[in-house]
Image (cartoon, rainbow, N blue to C red; front, side):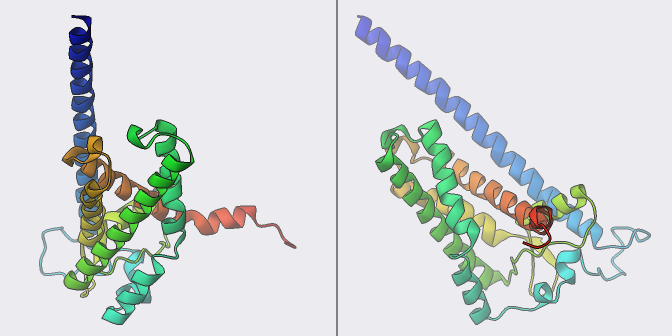
Length: 246
């Protein structure tokens, strides 16, 4: 009798936990979607002079932001150049530092529990994160080669913390086309969520579902936001720690 009661309580608790997780994932996914749409709208609005209505099709849109002002950003990429960018993505700080940091957070929260805490569990989490990074970069490379995206982030020439932060966040969800126009960063978004779903092949059964896959994709995009912000402000951070004579 008690065993049946305990089992029923555990099932109800698990159901509530899953419901809460689904709600959290949906909220996070919706927030990222709103942020992506807002970023694209901001880029499109900035493309027109202040005295020209946004719906005036008679005026050609100039460069969207300082991202597009950089010659390297405007240049159409050949397949060989895209391949070089893809190769360099595997020697970037984001690739080497991000997965262990994410694994450390998962180790602290003991997620997934089946991998337990300790050296073995941490190693599995690191390997899983590296696998997702490789898959995400590879998917992104393929998508960008097909739709002509230029996903390289170029720090802005803007002044002010807010404007520069907005530039970095926008650069996560908005790319440039081969014609210099802005477009959603399909390669990054599809890469992040594609890797999240493919990871269902090796994560424990408790996490091989759509909710966790969306969560993994969303956290990957949020990580990209953080790295873009760091890259935007890195010259200032380095200057703050630089002392004459060093």
